[in-house]
Length: 494
Ligand SMILES: NC(=O)c1ccc[n+]([C@@H]2O[C@H](COP(=O)([O-])OP(=O)(O)OC[C@H]3O[C@@H](n4cnc5c(N)ncnc54)[C@H](OP(=O)(O)O)[C@@H]3O)[C@@H](O)[C@H]2O)c1
Image (tube, rainbow, N blue to C red; front, top):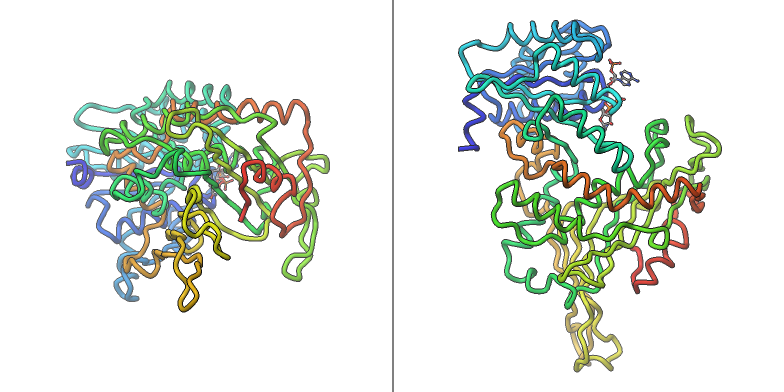
């Protein structure tokens, strides 16, 4: 069984770029939580690799700052688990493009791995993407990445961004494929590890009530929103090279769209799930300049504090045309969704922090309440990813008392109130899937290509015509023309 097989192999989990934020704040804490939950095999080791010079002990001290016992309250037990986990953590310092450095890593792995047990090695690339290829080649030259039938199985995990457009993404895919097969490759999108997103398939396919209505006949539009009320916060260098379309839309939001719009897969088999996502992404018409509004936040006072504009942020060129906001109307050309707009927007420096999918149903056609003072409004199903994960459904109710009149009310499911269990962090859930070999939530090469096809033409058009994003004040709801875009589809951003 896939569920248990992972516990019977020894595991070497290698994090490349282990001195970085993602490794120290997310990946190692997630590995520690899995260890505390009993989800790691008895024989496992974690090894960090990066250029920073550090001893094993200095590395352990760095990790200790961020380890938390989320599942095991009690100071003594927590201390014992932390000590036991850290004893299994090692560190190797070296250069990413130097096979010799990886020879040192190979020696550490050889010392910790038992030669008579089947081994699984995971290489997690927590490094800037320009280092992916040199690192993969160094691993190959140090003979670290080959599978050995019955003995050793290797997997590689890579973090977005996967290229800047379809061509560069294909180039990266081809380059990595020279070292790791598609079967060995796990392209992570941490949004897919979030509980509410994983719940999309249960919501749609394990309930009778939604699926019969899930189509162009009953749904008027779908709005997908990702917004933050902070700026680029020290990530200006990275952000300016990518912008909001590449950083958030082409990956997280398109994945949310795919899970909302796809057909029911044949089974939960990861390949069937990914087949359906590819199919729906290929049905999406590529966005054009007519379908998009881009924006850039400018200085303003927000909650009583003066906030910088994007162009004033340290590390942003004064003439940057990188969008910090985008709103796009996408159309899916298939029988289920023909004519239904999928309005997606993402922005920084806005007036709220939330990620949600809003399914807006059609209004009830001619009905007995049509002429009442409060005629029926459209039902809305909102899937709230963050903050306060949950689901709500608005519906019309009779107001208490007389005379008969209607009121819009909400059925609400709040994850925090309904589920007692600690919600696993997205990285915990996804790393466990990597260890188990469950690829349902990882992006397949053809899926990645299909996602780039939706945005590559418009990205090139925006950049080649040097289209300047529209300014919007920090702490606002985005540029006004984004409201006009939504209004074209009788929608409003909320
Ligand atoms: N942080 C997040 O939440 C997040 C979210 C999504 C995706 N990502 C992706 O995951 C990767 C890791 O994230 P991170 O925040 O940990 O990144 P990071 O701190 O910038 O980089 C990770 C490590 O890579 C090495 N490195 C960085 N820049 C380098 C350079 N120019 N040349 C050689 N080595 C360099 C550094 O280690 P040494 O100097 O010790 O070698 C650094 O500690 C990022 O590249 C990003 O693409 C991150």
